[in-house]
Image 1 (cartoon, rainbow, N blue to C red):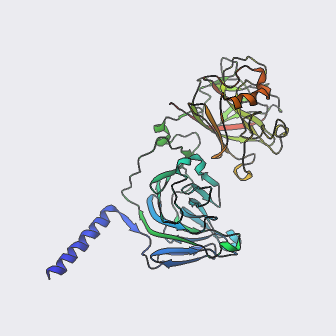
Image 2 (cartoon, helix red, strand yellow):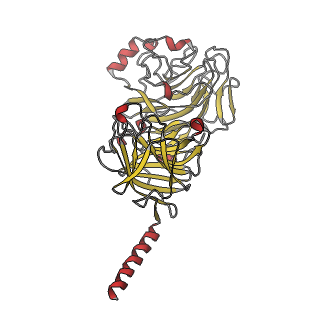
Image 3 (tube, helix red, strand yellow):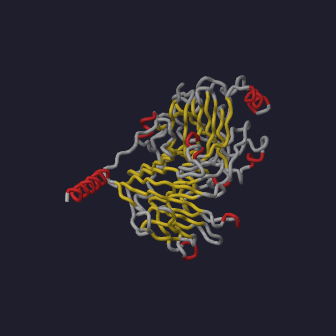
Length: 454
């Protein structure tokens, strides 16, 4: 009798601890109760207490998803993938388009990437069947080595309000602020395959648990870059790390005309949360002219959204001193903003160094077509200038070039460029940020900057 009472006491204590922690198991270790398969024909079974996905030929991406939807939560699980030439993912706040895949249904929504390949983007956030990459791990290279092939890896996904955060084996990987989905199902992806030798490969998931109440966000790492898709907004994390908006979405406060005492009276418009340079049929700096920040910056992390019209040309310049007093556009290091497919400037210069996201007339941006959004859609540019003068350009989260400002290699490039006539071009200790009027309609928003210090 005493033994039975003791067992009941232990059982009740264990249950109380479970309830207090608030974790709920989504997988009982022996059945697929609470889950259903969508979209494709890959196989799911159970092996040694783990859900096991098996790749199959001639099928689209397949997903085993929860029958229940979840809004705010913390999700934890363990995953191992056999094929290091393929990838997988964990869907969250996701949905099904029943008309997709010719009526077979297509899953779309946020995905925690599982990438054992040489690219190593595990923990990045992908928007399946919708917007493509939201947070590639080029934005956080320190997390690229966290995923370990050939063993189970600990996954953590934190969704609280608009804040979407991921971890790989305890290392924070991605941080996205986004409003597209407030809730949705959780899913385990078996990716489609393209080669016969990839058939029959396995992915294992186990110890899948979720917490939906009493949620406390993990402490924020101030150095982690945050992708915030809300226009002209600073999240709490961005504010904590020192970002400020250079454009508030409603006024031209903080900007003035280059070589002018005030903001241009014509040629620029603030409307519907955008700052737009108006068309003047391609005439450079003949309408409103360039605009510059009233403040100057040395080491910084600058992000900006831009939307071009067909055939448009513009640029975002940095270390603009206005000391040259030249005609036309003011002088500075330039992140090129261009319609590569239509504007003739894309074919000028050397080896593509006048194309989109390039360091204009100096270094070409190396980019894939899939990461370039066409005219009429928003792109996100980023320029990081470190205190040691190392500089990086990004386009939609992908690093497309890097260089050392003031190095001999940099000076050699300047010497064979249009900038060779300006002494010590691009080497000023500080300068303004500039938006260029090149005579074509281009819109900007979400212009934000963080000063960097040693």
